[in-house]
Length: 610
Image (cartoon, helix red, strand yellow):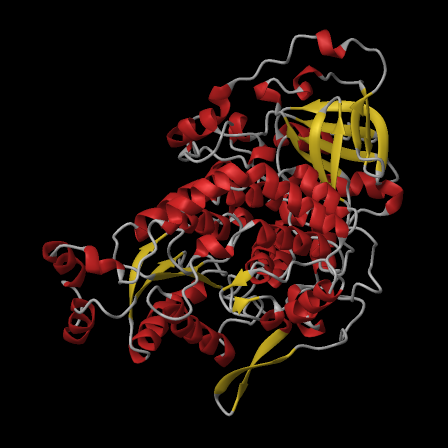
């Protein structure tokens, strides 16, 4: 397999720009590698505290310092469907680890908030920053020097990236991610969207809308559309942090339990002192990150990862930026059609061939680095296989050579589109990203007068009053990390979709987020620099002519209107500084990086400059 020259060149420039910081990160991590278990370095009083609640057998196992001990870090709660199945995992993991000669302890939990519940609510302004809180919570869980490898149990939007960022602070430890899998398919995503649009127009009431939503979100497991949660699972697999084929096996199945138990056994074998020592610092490198970006583009995955992958990379001493995403997007074909990029859900993606078929196709096309370290060893060949139970035993079998449903999943020789589903926009309004995989070609260029809003409610109120029945570029500003924590803006989608469906030329431009469910209305999101940090959006006024061109990759205000000399619009930080826990996040808003820098409030110690 010959690596595609663009993949090779992008990787080369990432390696070059990251050399100094990556070397410092690896030196720090490698200094902590050792032949003994971590608890061997603890004093007796320290160790006794960690054993006090164990059974007699557990005390005997852990008092000796020759066998590895696993940390279980979990995002379990029983409110969220995606994380409710994780409640059973610790017992399985402990049983499997003990039977295999090691041990496991529940090291700590991390918060798991749901963007689906907080969508359009004040709590959404805590969502993005919860990623960094999760990273810190993971670090606290792993800080006790009791653990020789970690199992991270998490699924959704900020949770998996946060866990990985935290785990990378312990680069000397092997880390295996353990997912829960998707819920069964409910009503179609198209039907769900149709009812939302009818509700936005006042054609159906709350009862009909709630019935529809409960038909879509109806059982334990991950939501089945291809948003950030399922993009997370794809990334952990293609970056070599899952067991092969683990991403989309449903909860409650015998195969899911078998994979979870095997994750424990496998992680024990990766610990220091064994023959397969595989610390996470060696897994998450420049090539693995490029593989992650390629997978994201090939599947039309979540735009949130234009921030999360940047932050993950920084935690590993690596610098990636949106130019890297853009260069790869030009050559990575779109191989999956999963809602909102098509009508299918992730269960149909799995049935069509899933990750094994996707990775096989990208690998054969020279679009993935194969010389990577994974939790399975060297290379990605193991990830072209999928798990199965044969006579009660877990085995891996060769994945399909052909898609079982070419309307959902295809090979690189017959893609849905020759390029990826993500575009970088540049212009006098800043830099932004747009997900075009769900946008029809006829809607990818919009030039229209700007209509300026500073809250979601103001836009929706204007829609309700019938004031938006015209071509427009809706500009929603003061929605960036420093302004209000960069909430997702999905409650705008039904209204904007209705306007587009009525024949109006409509686009959204915002320094906020739209996440993995970005739909058929063109949306330039994550505009950087954000308005409250001196970005050009603060100088726009109603009526300024704005052009969003996703074909040429531009985002500009047109004409000589003197907009650059205007005083920027005022921003009242108090509006998003109080209530629903927001008071506690002032330090996060004050120190957050821009979206292209990862939108993190961490002061990276190994990073040369900000």
